[in-house]
Structures are given as structure tokens and as C-alpha cells.
Image (cartoon, rainbow, N blue to C red; front, side, top):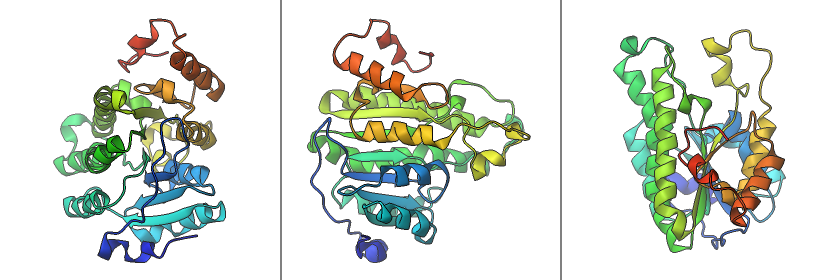
Length: 288
């Protein structure tokens, strides 16, 4: 059921408390940005289950109605929160609410924009800045608001929606590519700083999923083959359950990595059976 706090959240700053879970236990409270559509919506619905509270974030609360209803049908309690990540005032208000509330034990940073498709020297400062704010600075502000309390509780999980763009160059989408590369590096830094204290950070490149954003890209004009969004959902589900903690500090790829292979690799790492070369993968700019 949806808490009445949904409707007073913006004015009171109250998010109901929940007991944090320990490492290897399934996440009981998950904050998901970009939850009104696309991959964020699919992951939110995929993570919904009895006993799990979902804090859904979108630019406007009204846009979350459909996602919230689907999550409630699946047994989750739902809290909705509006935040326009391109506006500093909106971010300050949201992070103030988060800082004054119990921390989630998992965060999914799925909000994102693509920006202009033009040569780097023709990109407008306004669009470049907006893309960085939504794709990079929003996760940065969220981690500042929630990670300290995650660590106080013994740890937590952060899943960043990354991209193959994080390890490539582009002649006409520089803002997006720069933002995803920087997000990947931010995740790596967060992993290095928080791993020993129970923080598990995973970057997920979803492949080319057909969404409103990707369908509008010039690069995908005429594309007929798309990566099923279900692959990203099942990876998010496994991470929420603690089954991919051994891959913390890396980027996994829904388009090419099978869940079975990821589960096997994670188990080997946690059992100290992975070969030494795996540590080099944590540099995050190499393939498996």
C-alpha cells in the first residue's frame, strides 16, 4: 500500500523509518531515481515485493502514479518524491529530506538525459551543464545524503545505470559520454572508499534498450534489434538480493553478460577462487 506520506512528503520532509538490512540480506528499502519511465520504471517494478519499501523519484510526483500503482500491486509500500535534477533548488530540497530521514539500504541511480547531438565545439554550455547535472551530479548529491547513514548501519548497495558510452568516444554526443565516463569513475572512487565498511557499488551498462530517450537518438535511427530491459531488471534483482556483491567495483553489461555468468563470477570472488587478473578488472575500463 502507498503511505500517506507520499502526499505530504514535499511539505514535511518525512520518510517513514525502516530497519536496515545487513550485507548479503535482500534490500528492504530502495531509492530509485528516474522511476517514472524507461529502465528506471522497469527496475522499480521488478524490485517490488512484499516487505520491501520503494522510494520512487521523478521530476514530478504526478509522473510516478503508474509506476507506484504497479509496485503496490506487487506488494511494496511506496513513497514518491519529486525532484528536477537539473535545478539546484530542487536537489537541495530533496537531499534535505533524505538527510533528515532513515537511509535506504539500496540506491538505484537511473535518472538520465542524453543531451544535444552535435560536435563538441557546437554544444551549448546550458545543455552540457544540464546533462552533467542530471547524469553525474544527481548521483553525487544523493550519495552525500545517504551514504554516511548507510555506513553507520553497516553498509548498503548502490547501482548506477552506466553505459557503454562510459568507455568510448563520440563525435556528436560529448556531454552524455563525458557524464557517463565521470559517473563510472565516481562509482569506482565510492567503491574504494566504502567497500571495507560494507558499501557495495555496481555499475550496470544496460545495452541498447528501447526507451523514449534511445529511440530519439540519431545513432539508433532504423535500429531493429534492442537489448531486452528484462536483462537489466534481473541484474538489479540479483544485486538487491546480495547475489552480485562479489562484483562490487565493476561495470557489468546487460547486453553481453549473462546473469548465470555474473552469479558464478560473484560467487568465485567471494570464495576467493577468482584468478588474480580479476583485480585488474576493477580498473573498470577493460572488458571481462
